Image 1 (cartoon, rainbow, N blue to C red):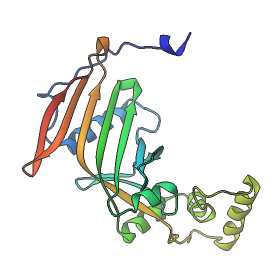
Image 2 (image 1 turned 180 degrees about the vertical axis):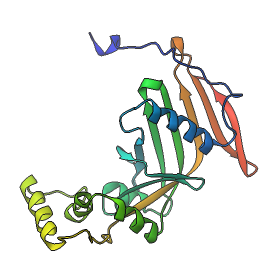
Image 3 (image 1 turned 30 degrees about the vertical axis):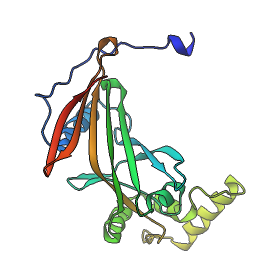
Length: 212
């Protein structure tokens, strides 16, 4: 079978303007809870798209770790490619969730800000010890000589911090995407998908339907 022949008809559900919450964060959590109940692998996995100063885009999958009315939080190495792109003064990002078994997608766009150091510290303390050591061992996105060197550095840190008290690295922490656009997509037959978009209006949100 060729790639052109790969297709699937989406028939599970529909999405109407009258069915969604006027608050897109509430609507997101409603769908996210349904994705968790469906036992989708890593329902908090999201594609994060950023752009550098020359307008060159890049995308990768990261894990969502917190949702509040302020936005969507994830954690990374500040020195990584995405960290450098997110630390620009005018930084914006797009995130996308794909929940295939539910035939659903959510797209979110917005500006980006670092979260407070105390918030990063609180989350870092909850991570498994090996992951905390890994944040020290890896200079994310940098070229390394070998896998063996990385593992040796991890083992060295394991000896340096023998207990649970692994401190927060100064180069590691959280970012928040502060949304100014949401799109909820529900697969439908004949590629006539349902697409509902939230955009800011008068301090709240305007809800509109998009052509598939």
